[in-house]
Length: 107
Image 1: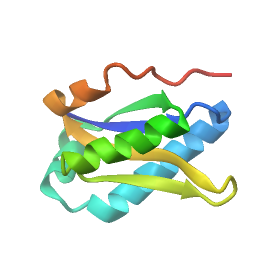
Image 2: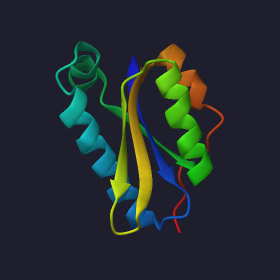
Image 3: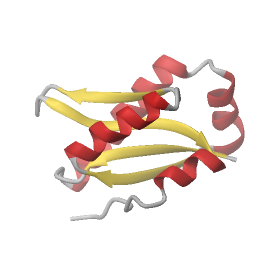
Image 4: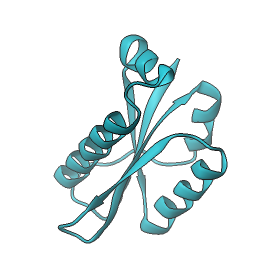
């Protein structure tokens, strides 16, 4: 089973977190939507997990995922002039990397 993990900035309001997660998903699907593991996720799994990070953690996760050569996308929100979210599809084993991150909370 695969899941899409969405890491969003914890400094955003709840509505902003949802919108930024959607932006990151759209960008990820645009970049990787035809790769076999992403197609499998879309057809078989479709589970999404939205997690909360600060700006430093978001940058650290970019580094970690690059180092593991995992396809991911980040979304840069021009209205706030920074990266606000990251999307990655991961199998169960890789998904364990994210278990220390908290899920997003409402306002």
